[in-house]
Image (tube, rainbow, N blue to C red; front, side, top):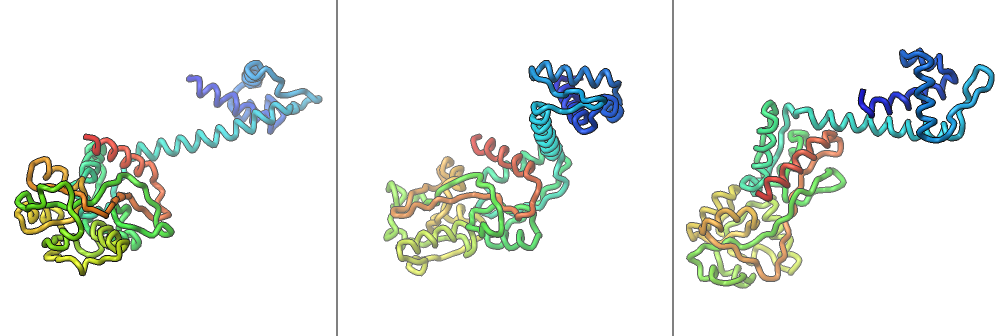
Length: 302
């Protein structure tokens, strides 16, 4: 029997003797002999250097120290039960979960995070739904999704969230563009270029438009030539010198390292993109969320 088991049994004996006022009655509940229960109580008294019970006729009367110890024992038992439930939940595999992922995150560490989870839990069934952030939140609200991983602002009074990453929006510029030789691009320069953007409702587009509004500007002042849902399509169009896009730096990292195009900061705009796992208020599997967060932290640093 381990030390924790002995500890638990001694305090369970304390609780029962305190309640029943008798070693014999407590022994019957514990399936032990009265002498064994008495030994456990004496062991605690020696450890605490205090008397836990005094005799009054045939009854055992708890002392003040006993009452204090019993209160702490009750709290410890409650914490232990919560710990066991959390550990059990973390060990259980999620059998079937539908997760919505914004297209702007499909080529990021999010996909590798989900792949890692399925490798660790081969019996788990994860289904990924790709929609823009606004659509994913609507599906989450309608209980068509269990989780939504988005870079879109969301109503905090309706959903809870777990922040897993921050990123920045930049201008993705073709290598052939004269702007590629610059250290940054201004909004005035951007107005003169053909833009390829994510559609309305996407996190990237929403953040870009909100940043412009803070400067008293709108997209109507820019030459938006094309909208595309797919980040991969947008990156190919930039690489082909069709135009410039506004994308997250992390989504462009691989293409930039391969020399396919360049990314430049946009002057006067500090567009911080926050990536959240959103879930409904009644979602209860926090252990699963914790696993995803840990996996994301691991793959992001690879």
